[in-house]
Length: 511
Length: 105
Image (tube, rainbow over all chains, first blue to last red; front, side, top):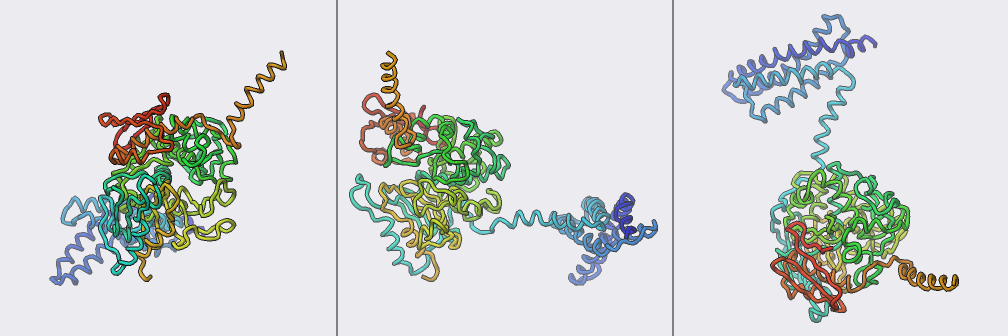
C-alpha cells in the first residue's frame, strides 16, 4: 500500500494548483449554466431543482475530477479515498453556497461571482487536495463540532428579563394555597421594635421565566434595594466564573499569584479552596449574637479588619491544610473577591463587575460596597432590588447563560451545585442541614453526615443563596422556579422549608 | 532583684497573653463601642443612601443593644457620623451608584 502513501503524502503542490485552476474554471461555469437552466422553465420547481443541483454538484465534482485526472496523468496510483473526498468537497461547497445565499450574494453581480469563485478556489481546492489524507476528515469534523458544542450548551428560552420581568399568572384555582402562603410569609407579630417573628420585606416568584407573584411589606417597595448579606457570596461565585471565563485566573492558582498575603503560609490557599470554603484559615463566623471580640466577621466588617480586608483575612493562622476541612467563612469569600478583583481590574478596569456580569443580566440596581482598599466585600454587601436578585438566581437557573451568551464557563453551575469536597472530609462549626457547594446552599443528602434533605418538602435539585436575617434566593431547576425572599428576621422563627413548600403549592401542576 | 523582675514580667505578660486567647480563639483588637459605632455608621449610611429608606426606618434598622451610639446624618454630603460616650465614633459616606457606602478608615 505504499503506492497510496505516495499519492496521498507527496505531490500536494501540483495537486493543489490543479484544484485551484479547476475551481476557477468550473465555479463561474456552474453559475452561468445554472442561471441558464434556471430560466428555462416557467415552472419554478422544474427550473429551480436542476439549476440548484448543477450549482451544488458541478464545482466539487469538477475539482475532485481534475485531481483524479492529474493523478492518473502523472502516473500516480489511484487513491482509494475518492468517494470520501467527493463527500467532503460537496459538504464544504454546500456550506459555502449557503453562506453566500445567507449574505445575500447574487450570481448576477460580477463581484459576487468573482468573490465566490475565489473563496471556492481556496476552500474547495484545499479540501480536495487534503481530503484524501487520513486526518482530513477528523479535522473537518472537529471544526464543525466546535461551534455546535459552544452554542448548544446555552439553553434557549424566551422571554429574558434583562430590561424587566414579563408578567405571568399563577395557576388558576390556587386561592387557598395563596392564602396559606401569604399567611405564613406576611403575618407580623408583636410591635415592630420588638423585632419578633417572621418579618418579610418582599417576595418575588419567577415561574417558567415569568414573574407570577410579587408582594412587598413593612413599608418596602419594588424599586428599593435590599441588602443581601451572605447572598452576596453566591454572586461572588458568579464573578469568579466570569474571571475564569476570561482567562484571568484559574481554579488552582495560589492566592499569592494575585494578592499580597499577610503570611507566607496563606499562599498554600488556592482559588478553588476559597470557593469550597476550604481555606483552612482559623476563622470564627459569629454575628451579633456571639462574642463581639472573637467574631472574625465583625472584626472584618467593622473592626480591625475593615481598613484592608485581604490583609486581615490572610493574617489568620492555618488551622488545617487548605482543601482538607470545611468551614463557612465570610473571610474565604471576601478573600476570593479580593483575588478575583486583583486578577480582573488590570485587564478590564474599574467597574468590571458591572460591565461583565451585573449589567448584562440587567441588575441595574446593584450596589456592592468595598473596603477602603477597593476590595469588594464579596461575603456580605451586595444590595439590589428583589426583582434584580431574581435575575441573579435566573442566571444560575440558566446554566450561567444569558440571552444565548455564556457568561459563566460551561460546567461552572454544575460544579457550583455539587457538594463541596472539603465538606465531606472534615467539618468545622458545622450545623446539621448545612450542605454547600461553591458558595451556594444545597438540598442534598450526603451519606455519612446528612441523611435527610435539608429542606425535606422541597425537590432535591433545589439550591439557594442565603443571607443573614432571612434573605434567600432559591432556584429549583426541575420546577423552572426562582423564589426570592428579602426580610428582616431578627430571631430564628422563619423556616425556609415551610416557606418553599407553600410557594411550590402555587406553581406545581398536580397537587 | 531578679526575682522581682520575673514577677513583674509574669504579672504583666500572663494577663496580656490570656487576653489574646479567649477559649483558644483569637481576640480582635476592637471593643464593643468601636464595633457598635462603626456598625451603626456604615449600616445607617447604606440604609439611607443605598436602600433609600427613610430616617425613622433606618434608625430602627441599625438599633443595637445597648443603644449607645448617637447618630448624626448629613444628607447633603450623604454621610453618617456616630459617637458613643464621647470617645468612640465612626463615619461612613456614600461613594457612588456602584460602590454604595464606605466606612472611613
